[in-house]
Image (tube, rainbow, N blue to C red):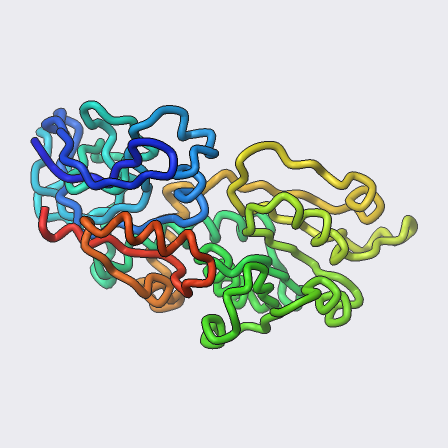
Length: 331
């Protein structure tokens, strides 16, 4: 069947095109998309052609889709009318997928979809994917009550990370690395470091260093600066754990590790890959239980045909836009 999709035909170019999606196989479902969400860090890197997954153009980006099952294969086990989350279509004619999320209809194995809890609106549910990325990182870091966590970079993943850590009984300090401005961040309920000399401010505020550093920036040079916040661990202090450094951003290539800075203080580096299905389910449950707020991160909902405008807004880090939801009602 024909449907519409956001397509990057070449690096730096955004279009909305008509594409062809096949009929579902016996174990698949056909989903009519309601909403999709841009994952800014990853998708802007895909758009620039600098993401490893963006090897061939044209491609359909995105990995956070919610919609309603309109056709179900005989072995799928999901009824038409079921509201589901998935990462995008698994098949589409004539286009590469990276990961095929921004599309009006998606074909997917039923086992690769997640039915939505009743209390989660279709519009909010795509943001669960971003929350799941934050949640996966937190599971690796294992924060303990009373610890100090510094979150560098307050985009969607950074803000969701901060909110999740606060629930664990830790002190969270957010670092406005990209200069979003205190007006945009004042409602987050965080301690926020902003302005010039960010890391000098942090060293004054945290003379004993941070228990956990979560770096969501995707900027390689931050690593060296942020390691100045590592706890000082003396060679004969066996009861003090070194700082856990969570590399949570999306990078175009290899990172250079400041070895001596990390070695001297026994820094542990943690690199979460993405989010597992259980992480997404858990994020949806937190949203349903109103333990995690996500709606305010997508302050702008646009019709799909305005996709070029959405990515242009996200190029400007000072636009105040954290991310954009696409509404697919017309398709």
